[in-house]
Length: 426
Image 1 (spheres, rainbow, N blue to C red):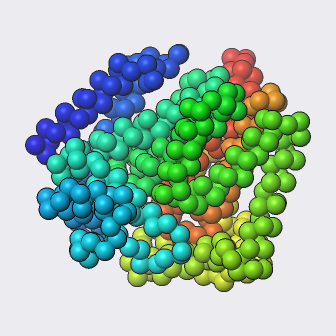
Image 2: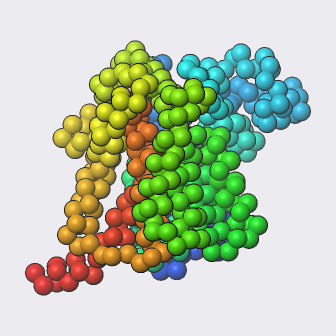
Image 3: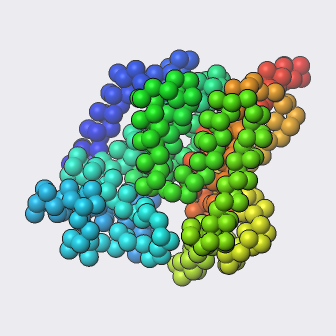
């Protein structure tokens, strides 16, 4: 059953993708779409193999197994009482003796925000209603959930940028995104939350129907529960997007003004009134992450150094943080096979930047607003990741949500026809 049940669920999801009109893209054949989902299934097998037969030491236990293991402990409550199970699932019961058996339900370091470990553990508990405890099913569900989220992102971007194959590639076929959204990790729910939020945002800007608004709200709720810092990066971009859509102010002025206002407000609330420890939390997260990386002898440890929560420290660290978030891992400094493809992805980003410089294409008004949205969201998220993450492997995973936005931004600014003509001439 450990093999048969995942195959059965994979076939069910393949059938849904084949028959559903939602998973249809004009200009992309259904065979390619099915094949793309098949690639994710293969990536799941790869992840399962390396974390079952390669990383076998206790210190190497990956997040996949951590969250699955705790979910299995809490799911056992259903055998005692279905009512108790649902109380745990929905956070009504916070004193159950089952919590004492878990290892990752509570964080070692708490920064005063929602414990996102619990969200992904609860997601695993829900999947266990269908998996009967077989972890392979969890991989397959992760594939479908992230695939659905990426489809929402694709539909939103493609409604603005008509280059279907270009958008399809940067949304679905980035290797790191395929790999790390092929297991029940937090990135899967982040992609789902971003999908709902982006689709609802773009659709609402065109037609403010209750369905579009509900879609947007669902995305916000998911991000609130799984990765608060992604939502923080998203809010100024979303606010500016709606203001530009409904007003006549120039996009660059709106986005820059909202960002500056947000930074000043957060700085005042943190350093001035000490009511919202935003920067203090990032400093604490960075320092605790460094301690954990040193204790566990992380192979891709990045010696960025500890900081204290002062305005000057954050200003001073910002250029390095953004560079690390964008450029790492370096192709010449790869330390394990899992970093090879991310290194090429980083190289691809700089190639796109160069092509944008050489073959710049002035975007239309609608595209210009979305480009600013993508740039601000990506830049803020990259800063958050770079300022708080001292492990290259962590940077690779955490920046996966920006792939559809950052890479597509440069694709929208490149005159591809001019490049094709240049090659034909030569």
